Image (cartoon, rainbow, N blue to C red; front, side, top):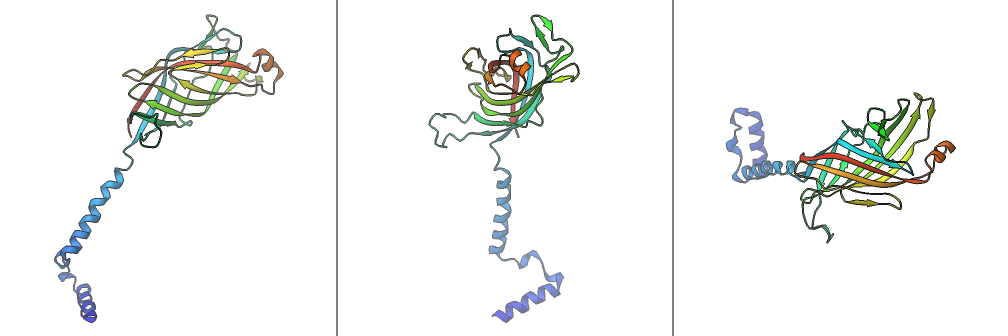
Length: 241
């Protein structure tokens, strides 16, 4: 039997004209069919992935230490990232809906406008043109509930203060907070956000503690360590990836 099978295969390879699909047995055809039908399932695995975008709009405010609020209009701020559905069966009894997403923004695409005389006012007047505060995001991630509109995003950034076109440059102020659509309360400052509406518009607030830096002037000027408050309007959009 073995030699007959080998001869048969040898004949097939020597005579290509006789090698047709008819040589496949029903079991072979079924096996090929099953292997082909399983391929589309691999493309359906990431069905719980979404793309998410972030855009700053309108006018908000920033405040630090004992100083009055800065009026801040960060038009043009934007960023993008990915979101994943949170499994309600993952063991967390507090999760009741598949509408909650775990979100992570790519900080390389995240741009938040600097505080300048074009974006910022203090006591009703534009910031002096020789002052500038750049914002360098380092982390922006958290959760979004599409049904309730609740947003909570961990935010870490360095605020870099310069004056006189770089003549004076202070060490970066590191700010870590949770930007939320709920209420953020510190020891001296507080803010209340607004949940996302049907168009993704929301108000994000966050109170953070700012520690001292290696700069006596900046520590004295801002009375560090102290608290700061961020209050921003934004649009967050979620779409199928």
